[in-house]
Image 1 (cartoon, rainbow, N blue to C red):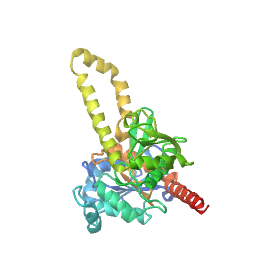
Image 2: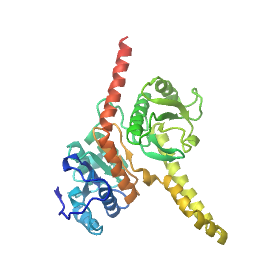
Image 3: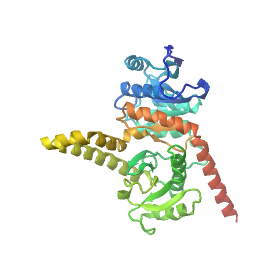
Image 4: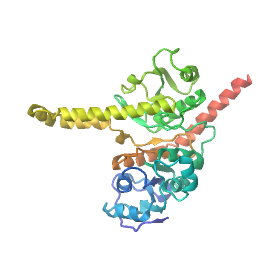
Amino acid sequence: MGPLPERGFPCRGRMEQDMSELVKVALDAMGGDNAPSQIVQGAIEAVRADGRVKVYLVGDQDRIGEALSALGPYPEHRVEIVHASEVIETAEPPVNAIRKKKDSSIVKGLMLVKAGECDAFVSAGSTGAVLVGGQVLVGRAKGVERPPLAPLIPTEKGAALLIDCGANVDARPSHLVQFARMGSIYMENVMGVKNPRVAIVNIGAEEEKGNALVKETFPLLKECQDIHFIGSIEARDIPAGYADVVVCEAFVGNVILKLYEGVGGTLIRKVKAGMMTSLRSKIGALLVKPALKETLKAFDLEEYGGAPLLGLKGLVVKTHGSSGPVEIRNTILQCVTFGQQDIIGKIQSSIAKAASGTAKEEGN
């Protein structure tokens, strides 16, 4: 692992910092549908935008080098290539792939975080491998029962955190309570939402509704003094922004996320098609285009970055397999805020405090 030649490129954006103070992000350059060219492009856009970040591009050094050569000047002292000769494909069994492909871009990137050489790992590759590798290689933070995958989703009132959306399909009530605590910490410290509203996904607003998991979890969340629990939320109210942290187990969360993506994409296509149906509609489209573009941008999932796997000893973030430069850039910049706000330390402190309170109650 070595630095690329220096070009003396001036930083665009935030001022350069001492190398020891940089947030170091390992990026799986070979993961996703658009690897490595668009993944590498997103990394370069991130280091151009923020002088506080350094990116380690993990993957085939020749292909990464070709992608870099097409991008023009950039601050090369904040970009390094870490060669990895293998790639974990999406269809591979995650556990076997992590065990056998030690020289894959995912494993080597995660090992950089485990060794403390990097602060975060980002990948658009195999979700299963990232989830398994994150827990096995990086490891869970002390006291965390199950690390949840938590993407930001657009709502009418800004971004909300959907937690969990894919890591724990058979969660227990105690897991969901920890999800609520971790989600609150993330939204308050990374997204700047004061006293974030927490809700559990349900089929009605009444407390007595829901399946066994929701019914058992609801009173536990009501007792939590360190979160702002507002009760149940129905799926139709999520886009309206009624909650900042939307708690559920992974099966429900994944269905919500995929439906979100599907409906959003369909609506955008229908709007665009409708604007092209006649001369009058085309003229109208030209008039509303600037405002419409800005509105649709707020509902573009790429603008919100990737989904962190919260509750690990280091930061691991999964982006969409179709991620382009915008999502990769925003995910890397998201890692900067995560690291500087010490989210991992705050999660551990919150979990430890809750466990201490439970122990005292049981002792009494």
